[in-house]
Length: 285
Image 1 (cartoon, rainbow, N blue to C red):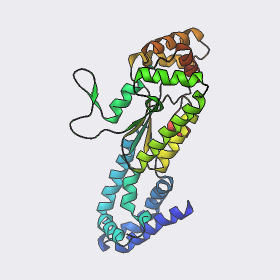
Image 2: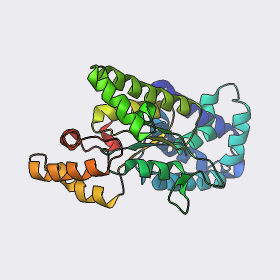
Image 3: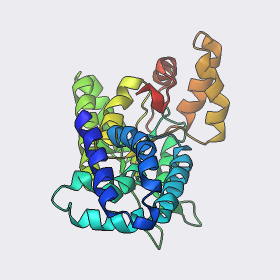
Image 4: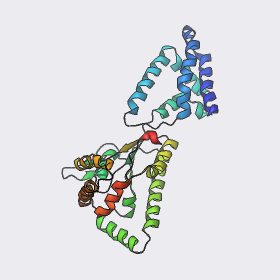
């Protein structure tokens, strides 16, 4: 961590040599301020932000860029970059671009039948045709969606058969673990390729379910956003998640979700998911 602090100071020192003389008087006074602001950000990159984090970071970046232009840092920075090609950690403009990364990982949260897979499609960039079917847009690309359920089968009837067979031979625990590990492997592979957005469409009920994805996102410079379903019935059910002792309310919620889910997950299983639900925010990780 201290080495990264020194690297940020090296950048400032290199730039000081190349500042135009007309602005030279401003630079000594601003170096401590700039270093104080830049160093913690550099040490903490890549950043994990909430949904509203981008606007604040972008505003800071724009203000700083204007300041750089005023004191002649922009031209000096280009010269410094040319002399640092063999050490990418010292390329300050590249670091700025990474800090305000446009790479996004959406982590869906919701039970079966909650409508989260509908939102996953929307967030990945798919559009609906006149018949309500999800299709790729005419322009632009869609991001990948990874789901343990889809690794079982994308056909609802086949899914039910595979899941039932695994339960009968008592292999469901082992197989579920394998499907989730494969989901993680595909996600990190997409991160290494720099694909964005990436959507993880699992139930993600507890912090331990989400933590590996958050850690992978931090390592690969992705912004993380938790997304719950936007369906009207989930909005009705959501307040009941704070009433874990209200069996009647949870029973009604589970019945409603069981009716809507396509994989045949019974109400009793969904009720158990609602009871295990943990509220969380990015700052918890």
